[in-house]
Length: 220
Image (cartoon, rainbow, N blue to C red; front, side, top):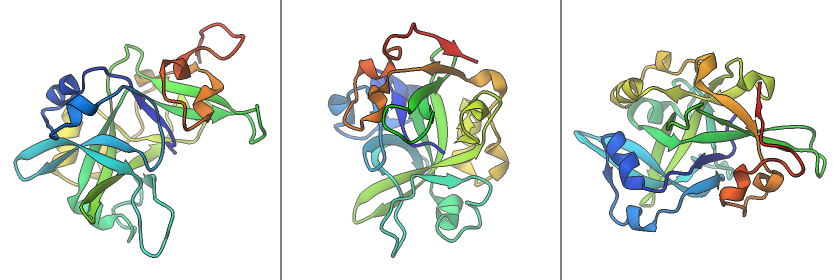
């Protein structure tokens, strides 16, 4: 799954330009780098409506009636046929820009969960495949997940479906599940980071600091 992620870019306009999208009005001025994006929070997504591609704010989590819990993830293998997601898969696909995502090692007990930040070796943008909907004038999105690659599988059996820049264009143009394959083994590295990430309210550069009392290490 994907339950937290990052987009630490300081200039959202450059992100929009790289993705061939127009920024939603007011989004650039209000933007702050994100070090710990959590479910239900607002985050920019790329979507297409006709010939127009935009980068707009959306809440993380699709809702289904009568289910009260937002769906923050959808399985890529079944989204095209599952009633909750199939209409969005056919007509409302999006891309979620990020530069890393978190998973955890350890048990559920207090003080035992160790966050691991998965990111591109060169710090490049990650393009997460997603679906969107609009309800009562508000956009919302979910992130599609696929089987983990060799790097992520050491911590979790699922990971976001990552797209190359070319495959991003294909994904926005057509509903093709074949585009949602696990990422190559060299696409990501894993870095242990501060347990500060465990707190939803923590959203600052210290989230990516080394664990307390440990040197900055890249795992695996």
